[in-house]
Length: 361
Ligand SMILES: *Cc1c(COP(=O)(O)O)cnc(C)c1O
Image (cartoon, rainbow, N blue to C red):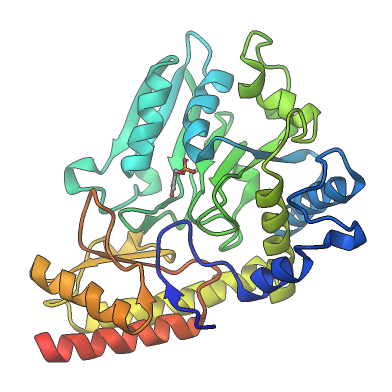
């Protein structure tokens, strides 16, 4: 068996220990005589998976019982619709900080539901930064502020989060969920597609204050109503069982690593290894994000020519460093270095980058 370092943006690497556990339990999950793929979502086996995954995520984030953790389908993209459907009543404005193509998609969906306002946009600069907190001024009738915590395609990330007072803060943390501690008291609802940092495609984790979700319009389509999912412990219908199971294993793995503080230290150290090469040769490796906005999860950069970029990808792939091509919408190169990317992966990438610079400068 030969495992590569997969720098793909998502679905992305999972911890090897987790994959091995999945493999070892696949034919007989917890002495049930069945695989997790075959058990009923109403069974004791799955009930335990579901409740432990919920509790472990709460433990990692330090959340008490006033919070719920939901496991839903539809991708993070369906959250762009569910958020305004649940929280944007007539007469109020859904407020957005436009820091990426995913923020723009969120605005687009919300505008189909109600009134929206974009109070910050870095689009004119190709989304090369997130706002300073002083740039976020809320209008009076704000229903919520929606931010994209980590901008997967462009490689920018919030380091601090705004204090929105009585206005609920909603965050799309799809690509940096559980990569570092966050001040959860500032948020009302967080959502994340699991496939970047904490699991496979097909499951979305929603972390919300119960009081925020309670008491929403009963005319909402059932499956799009957060309260229904909360009241049914994510078991209103058949949940993405296999995905939740893996998210649960990843949460246990994160706890075993020492929790989110330890992960943040590791992620900072990993990102530094790569950014240091970019900063050492800025005329060759052209970092895309403004320094203050740099993401610890997605390192984005370009080379002097697209031919060199293609050559970079080909040579890296040949030595087991995969998935370094930038998103089709922006081009360039991108190294996604989520929780499960080992430090050694970043060290090997940095060494390759030094060599590539030396040969092609
Ligand atoms: C990947 C991603 C999405 C979209 O996720 P899907 O699960 O594919 O719908 C949304 N927001 C961010 C920040 C992402 O990285």
